[in-house]
Length: 215
Image 1 (spheres, rainbow, N blue to C red):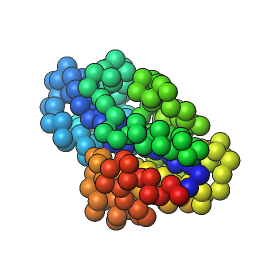
Image 2 (cartoon, rainbow, N blue to C red):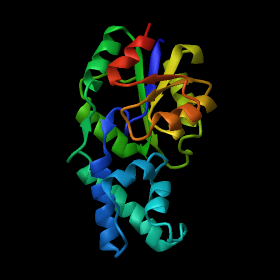
Image 3 (cartoon, helix red, strand yellow):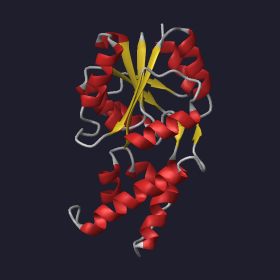
Image 4 (tube, rainbow, N blue to C red):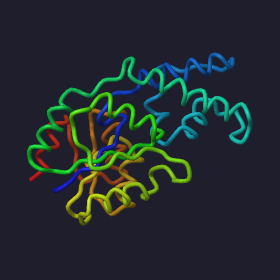
C-alpha cells in the first residue's frame, strides 16, 4: 500500500451525536418526530438528501419543506459539528504511523464539502492529506466511484497501490466500483456482516490494525 483513502464519519471521526443533535433540533422545530442517537447510525452515510429522506420519510423530496429541512440541517451542523465529535481512539496514532511510513492519505466523504473541510481542519490540523473531498453540487455521492477516481488521479498511483477504509456498505460499494480493495472499519457505525456482504477484502478491529496492510 502506497496510499489510503479514508471515509470520514464512522471511520476517522465519531460524529453521530452532533449529526443527531443537529437534525433532531431541526425536525423538532418543524413539528416532526425526532430519533434516538443510535438510529442515526443507520440513517447516515449517503449524503444529506438520503439522510432527510430516512428521518422524515413522509415528506416530498421535491417539496419546499424537505428542502428547507435539508438546508437548515446543513447550516445547524456547520455550527455544531465540533460540539461532541471526536476522533476514534487510535486514529491520531494511525495517521502519524502512516505518515512516518510515507503513505499518502486522502479523505472521501458524503458529508457536504464545506463541512468536510471544516471538520478535517479542526480535528487534524497537523496531518497532511493529499486530497479531501466531500459532497459537492453536481457530483454524485458515494457509492458512485467518481470521487474515488478523482482522488486516484490526484494521488497519481495505480489502483493496486491504494486501499480504501470505511465503515458502511456504501464505502465498500464505492471501493468496488472504483476498482479498489476495501478495509472494513469494525469500530464504526455498521457491523462486520454488512461490510463483508458488500465486498470488504480486509477488516480492522481498531484503527492501528490498519497498519498490518501497510507493508
